[in-house]
Image (tube, rainbow over the protein chains, first blue to last red):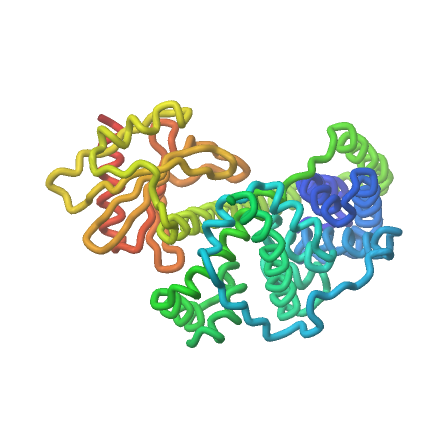
Length: 178
Length: 252
């Protein structure tokens, strides 16, 4: 990773390749184009200002996303986002038994809009962990580092978030097939 | 591992985060339990569908331009404070570091690509309709793809080999359509994926690459502007044998 003190051009070189994906993540958090732009802009300015404190050899992407997410949490929309839990117990998640027609057939017939609607409908703490894992393809460790939560919590939020998405998707796809 | 234990591991399983003994135990259970296998498949398909649907929002070119200008304007004072000899040395060091990051990113890109191909093969096998055109005759399967794909390809002659063509379907990888062919070999099933060869974000592949993912053997190469992937649970020598047949057919 670049040394911020000696490579003044490195921030732009490191940050701009992440720009489009950071914007996508910001839009999923805020669900608003103007707010997403403000969030990315504020994140970049904060990161640039604090680039001297970025530790060489550590994960730049996780560092940037952590700043973005913390900035979101202190924004007006972030503060309005109440902590909503799908389940109070964060650990030892066991998937429910599948029933009826194999769900795989239903999901394979879904359009992207159904998936997007289900994702948009999730509380932000589940939405962010699913976007980081499935869209950004971050490892559990990277997500834990970004969100400053234990890996066990990453797994339980993923599990509950995906379950909530599937519960929302199944009835609508069933009715579309009927 | 019983069903309850397996289901507590399903999330890390579909995210390829299980390792060693836990992975082996989970795979052994899934092979013998249709209910858990259906659940795993459902979760995997939700994950893949989310990946496709999630990259939805794109910044406007104007916003990107504004940010680039803003970052450059903020960085400019730092340039002035640096002394030139130090700047030259650190510039070289930065170039080396960026090259290393590029190689690392490239390697990660290839790793993800192979994992996605392995996922697509497993998903296909678990599907109730693994192929859309069902035929052992290559002269039936190849014409079926005409008009469905922006390229053409050859299917090898399998007479006097142990391989049998099962059929094919259209597959999508990174939003590009391609061919997926299914072959039987004794009790094994092998998928062949053929897509237009687009280097994309990572550096070009080596001429030919063989790898292993989740007990699946994968071989990939580029030929005539197309990228081929052969994947299956057969031994690596059998995957290589089918790859050789495909390479010979592509050159004929």
